[in-house]
Image (tube, rainbow, N blue to C red):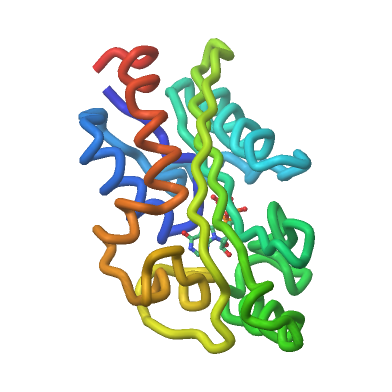
Length: 200
Ligand code: ITT
């Protein structure tokens, strides 16, 4: 049986395959790219959970298959939680990770070390074609570096240093990141709900 990953972000797809596989989800995982005819949904929600549900329901309705979606972002303490749900389009357009990161670093240039707290947040949503839904959340707390470091991961990984680590998320291996990440936490919590609602 099959489960659709309702994301067009290839980095998320890689992480989700590893996280869900390790968490015992044995369903065949299809990327949203398997359904090019399904238009992207507008992320009109004001919370990660609302946007994750919008994305999951849209794919579940369009494909007739259960779907899971991830909505995530970086929440900076001194910015009152921004970029938050706007993390993918902080420069005003979607999808340029480097430009988003550079803009954020510039905005935080004068913020001293002791006020550079931030966290990654992730909402994981499951939607069924009949309308049933489940949402879980996870977060990874740390501090923001002044310069990017590391080549792993994606997005803001080169500047977030998790609490109790001396490396940025981009300097962790994929396994190390998934073990502590917002996405790992949210989807490991979702996995038993997938097992309950989607017979395999
Ligand atoms: P989909 O909506 O198709 O899933 P997207 O990239 O637009 O893809 P979001 O709207 O959830 O997804 O935006 C997530 C953004 O938050 C992402 O582009 C990164 O900038 C940031 N982000 C999320 N998780 C991250 C992670 O694990 N490491 C670094 N940055 C992350």
